[in-house]
Length: 128
Image 1 (cartoon, one colour):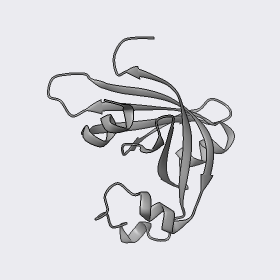
Image 2 (image 1 turned 30 degrees about the vertical axis):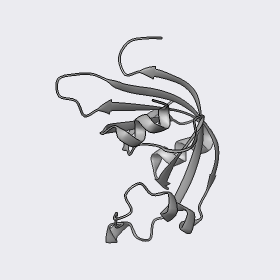
Image 3 (image 1 turned 90 degrees about the vertical axis):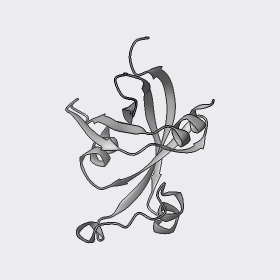
């Protein structure tokens, strides 16, 4: 199974970690990545701390823990930001859950598609 199939078919929770230009780290819960191809992923982001960090430091890590009782399986993706765009139509087109409704208090928040190159993939636990 390739990486895009893995994320399309595996349930779990993900955390995207970023750091600003001074190395101050942030971690936030994020959905599974959307795949452009096997080397490029994209997430929908609002203009909050994760997005702000990526303006000065393009590196990030995504940790995905599978929803499997009593095990620690999943993936770690090491990423470099490639580009971003903010086309609302494209954002709606790429959204995982087509039935998702943006909460009323977030309707006016600007959203971005942020593209990353996958630099390295490791299992959730172990390996270097």
